[in-house]
Structures are given as C-alpha cells and as structure tokens.
Length: 218
Image (cartoon, one colour):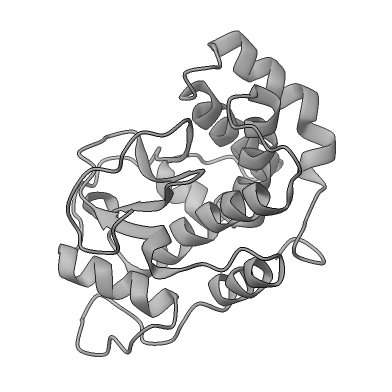
C-alpha cells in the first residue's frame, strides 16, 4: 500500500470495515492538502500551524492507540494509512486487513473529524492485531469490532448525534452504537441484512462491554 499521497484506489483484499456516515445536508470538505496535514498532525508527524482548518496538537487517543498497537506487536507504520478521495456517499473511511486505514478526504471537514475517523479505524486495527483468528468475513467477528469501534471512539457522543439530526437524549448512545454497527456490517458482502442484524444482537453484550485497550470507556 502506498503512503498518504492523496490519490489512487486501494486494492481490494477481503473485507473492509467501513466507518459509516449518516451526517446530513453538508457536502463541504477540506482541501486534500489540509486533510493529509491533519492526518499527520493526529499521528504526531508534523506541525500544521500553517493550515487554517487544523489544530496543532496531536490527538492523545490516537497516540494511546498507536502505543497499544506497538506493544501488541503491530506498529502503525506510515504506509498503513492513506488519504484519498473516495467518491462515496456512505462511508468516511475504512480499515482493511492487509490494506490498512483509508481516510476519505472528500468527507473530512475538520481536524476533529479526522481524529475521530482515525480512532475508529485504529480500534479495528487493534482488534485485527490482538484477536486470535480474526475473520472479517465472519459477521459476528465484524459486528463485534464495529460495536467496539463505535462505542469506544466517541462516535456516538450526544453532540455528534445532534449534528446528525438524531434528537433523542435518553438511551441515545446504545441506540447509536447499534445503528451504526448494523450499517457497517450490512456493507460486508458476506453478511445479508438478516445475518448482519442477528450478528450484532448475538455479540452485543460481550462486545459493548469490552473496552480493551482502554481501562474504561474514554
């Protein structure tokens, strides 16, 4: 896989865990140059003070996940993350076993969204690293990682849900995690709609409560 050059299409190798997008009504996105700089900033590779969209400080959760990946024997190398224009309306990025992380710059509007996407996909990468016999074609395996990624990344914080147009406050987080996990698993070509739903339900309790590598939900 090539590095963050902002171009090209990743080869298809198995199943990719896509980060679902259900944002509404705003098609603006940052320039590709700023997107690449934002990825580098989150990963502590460079200062990005000259880019107006971006904060300069690295993201501590991204840093923590990178450290945990390295401790587990799976360092996050530059070639594992690529920035590109995905020309897709249903996901912001993805993780593929053997492919790494794709950040869809044509869906990124801020440094916060880049950080959030990287956290989500790094949780998938962590699962791929530490779970014995991880099989992304197995709907239950994929569902478990999606539940964990949506829960632990903060994707379902109530402020993010309000921006997506979901107004429920009580019980919103679990509903959001389940909704977004189901959306992603349904995109797995090996999981039909019924199989995806059954998989999410079957692993929900154990995977929602699995906070590794964090001591508790961040």
